[in-house]
Image 1 (cartoon, rainbow, N blue to C red):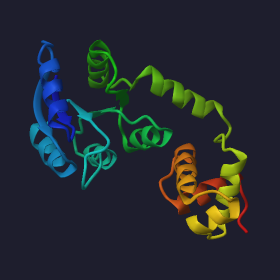
Image 2: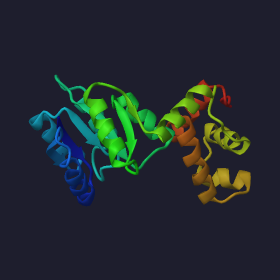
Image 3: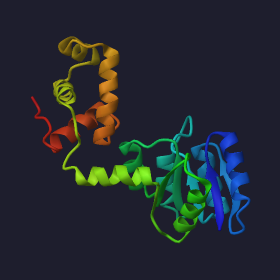
Amino acid sequence: MRLFLVDDHPVVRAGLVALLGGEADMEVVGEAADGAEALRGIAAASPDVVLMDLQLGEGIDGVEVTRRVRELPAPPQVLVLTTYESDADIMRAVDAGAIGYLLKACPPEELFQGIRAAARGESVLSAKVATRMMRRMREPGPALSAREVELLELLASGASNREIARRLYITEATVKTHLVHIYDKLGVETRTAAVTAAVERRLIRLP
């Protein structure tokens, strides 16, 4: 099977090329360090499976590359291979069309099996990622703490980080930390999206 590697770290790509080169049924037909290069290379190489990192430095990230690749006339399967394992990262990648999600810490044999399964059109998830997704499906809603809900309510009122810090008697750095956790739990990336998601899930009410 023909493989294409997308990762912004040259050492990682070189290691994968060496690792995959030992498998008789696998051939690396191209590699890219950023999103734009990946889109050009994938269209030209016509691989069967793309190994995709999520963070690619400046420009288009791995999720957007995945979405565009899956829109090609005869798209390859996209198997995410990354160090990022937040709920938001996982759901964004799956929503974009990735057939699987593996972590770079996985054993080589798990990677080989995952690539072969992806090539057959089968879903692939590392055990850790599968556990997170199952937990997310079982839970009726995100497990936000009382303080996180309080902070969301202040966000909904239009308060800035400085105002939230003053109202809750915490530092602005702590506010930012809470926001990171809230975004992760709600699967969003912006303040507006967080408020919208919280309202839709009846976690808070608009003032």
